[in-house]
Image (cartoon, rainbow, N blue to C red; front, top):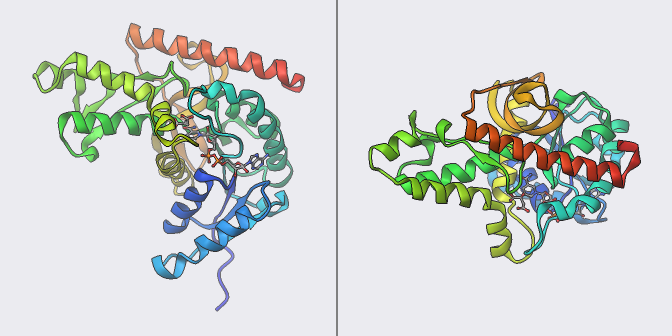
Length: 324
Ligand SMILES: NC(=O)c1ccc[n+]([C@@H]2O[C@H](COP(=O)([O-])OP(=O)(O)OC[C@H]3O[C@@H](n4cnc5c(N)ncnc54)[C@H](O)[C@@H]3O)[C@@H](O)[C@H]2O)c1
Ligand SMILES: O=C(O)C[C@H](O)C(=O)O
């Protein structure tokens, strides 16, 4: 029987570890038909065929194709970008700036020419600089281009908090703001177990400040911990799950409040750059930047993070004068 053509279309630029996992999750959730794009010939096609053959076993109905041609992303509702290079042990995310900036240029132009109405989620590192550059190269409205980092960093924080208090992770809610680097700001005051702020749980003697401080530190280094363990490549299951949560918020107009690298234009005293803040995502893309009250320590932490992102933008402009 002929299939409906009114399904949503999800284009995944980069068919590596995260791209393949994104495709699998999007198919399992039947978010729409999926195009996997990569410059490696055969890889997106091979992964698309393999994933399509999960359909009969898992019972999902989604058309999955692989491509090396940007024309195939035409009409995409959502694009998730993971194209580029991942860091190796001993490297920082910022070491990827030069190589991945060139990738963002090619991807941005591909999106501009073939899918300018899509909601674009960037995952490529160094995240806050790459999402800014991707927006510049694509020319899309700022509210339609967003970076994935805070959902992942908060998921790590939540996992560690759930472990510490020996409670279900479902009852834990945490917030990590700022750039996706060593200067990220896990906001302990807004982190709760079923509504009870973590500092109150410490006061109740259920943990200690030292243990919470260690969890904050581990969260900040969460990506590096996995890079060191894997030896080659970086985390991809939780990053893909986080990207899918953001895509679902847009596709299903969920009005979710999620920490994302969003364009900030005045809020938090920050102007004209992408950095991790709470935003409302719905059918209008990033519909609002939510300005929460921060204490002095968190404000200072956010400023340090913003300054680190600013330095990366200067580096981007130095490498590619078209960005200046
Ligand atoms: N934002 C985050 O929280 C977060 C989390 C995890 C990983 N990352 C980053 O995501 C990126 C991808 O990670 P991964 O594990 O999927 O890496 P990977 O190496 O498995 O996959 C990257 C893919 O990009 C492709 N690629 C390279 N240049 C391209 C181009 N010009 N056009 C299209 N495709 C191109 C490669 O062929 C490869 O298949 C890395 O930069 C990594 O650091 C970010
Ligand atoms: O740490 C990395 O290099 C990948 C990613 O940014 C992560 O946090 O897992």
